[in-house]
Image 1: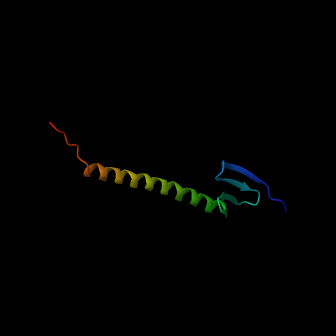
Image 2: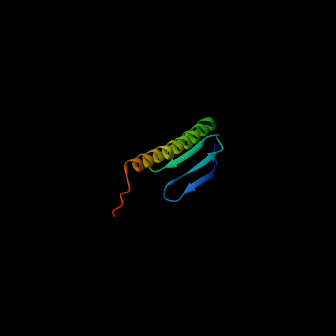
Image 3: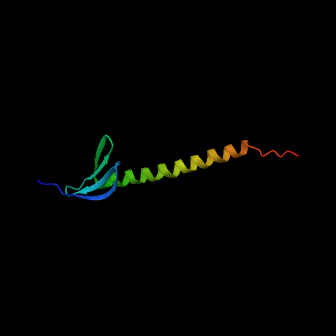
Length: 76
């Protein structure tokens, strides 16, 4: 049986994601390929989005913490 893959997203020199006629999603990254069913793919997408959101919040907290420790001193 031949599997037909349809590209969904690619990023040059990094990897890509395709859907397959067998019902799986193929995620190709440097050094690894992951095959997920639709539910697993949806969960992975949600995990990545949550990780991005948490990363952004963490960066914001770190920036605010640094700003609280820094003071502007004027010389007269």
